[in-house]
Amino acid sequence: MFDVITFGSGVVDIFVFSEARGIENFVCYKEGSKILVNNLRFDVGGGGTNTAVAFSRFGLKTGYIGKVGNDENGKKILSMLKKEKISFLGKQEKDLTGCSIILDSKGNDRTILAYKGINDGIKFSDLKIREIKTRWIYYSALLGESFKTQKKLAEMLVKRGVKLAFNPSPYLIKKENILPLLKLAAVLVLNKEEAGMLTKESDLLLGLHKLGPEIVVITDKDKTIWCYDGEKKYSIRPHSNKKVVERTGAGDAFASGFVAGIITGKSIEESLELGLKESESVLGYFGAKEKLLRMRLK
Image 1 (cartoon, one colour):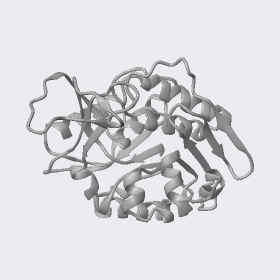
Image 2 (cartoon, rainbow, N blue to C red):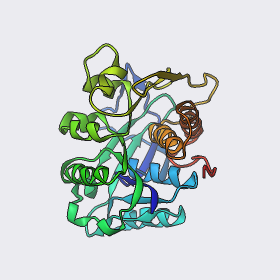
Image 3 (cartoon, rainbow, N blue to C red):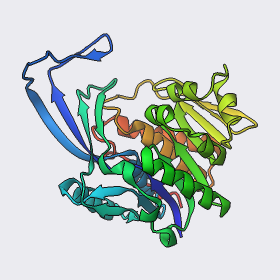
C-alpha cells in the first residue's frame, strides 16, 4: 500500500543561460541572430516526478504514474526514480520523452518551452491497476488521452476511499473540463491566475470551494498564501529575506509539501508552513529537485 502515488509529467529540463534580457515582460531574441549560450544545465523535471521526489524524501511510500520514451531521456528519468526509491507504475515505449527548455532563469521569472511528448498519451489500459493501491493520489496537469485517464482513475479510486490532491495549470484549465476532478478533490492547490480562470467570484477561496474541493489553497508568488477548508480561512506570508535564484519547480514543491503535511496528519497551519519551507528551499537553487527537503514525516 502506497502513501501517495503521483500522476503527471516526467520530462528532462534543459536550462539555457544567455545574455538576453527581459524588456517589459518579454524576453527578446533578434530574428536571424545567433545567441551565444553561457551555460547549459540538464535536470529531470515535470510535475509528476517533482512531487514524487518530494513525497519520497518526506519518508512516504511513493509511486509514480507516467509515460517515458525508450530514449536516453526516458532512461534518465527511470534511473532518477530508482535512486529516489519511487516505484514506477507507468509505461515505457518507443517514442520521445517530454522535454522543457527553460530560457534565462534569472530569479524573478523564466520562460519555458514545453514539449509534452509521450506524457499526454497515457491510456487507461497502460495502467497497472492491481498495483495502484494507495491512500492518496496526486494529479499534476496532463492533456488529451492522459487527462481522460486521470478522470477515469480518479472516479474509481475516490469511490474506494482514496483521497485526491489536484494541482492544475493554465493550459489544462483552458483546454479541458476539469470540473469533474474539482468535485472529487480533497485538496486543490493552484495559483491566483489559475483560480481566477475557474471562478469569477470576488472571493476566490469561496468560489473554488463551491466547485467541490474540501480544501483550497491559492498561492501568489511572493505574496500571501491563502487556504480555506469550508469553515476557516488560513494564511501564511513568504519570507521577504529569502533569496530567489530560480523559480522552476517552486509550485510543485509547495503543493507537495502542503499535501504531505495533510497526509501525515498535520494541521492546516503546519502543512502551510511545510509547503512554504519546501518551496523556499527550491527557490534558492537551480533545478526543480535540487534542494527538496529530506525529513521523515512518519
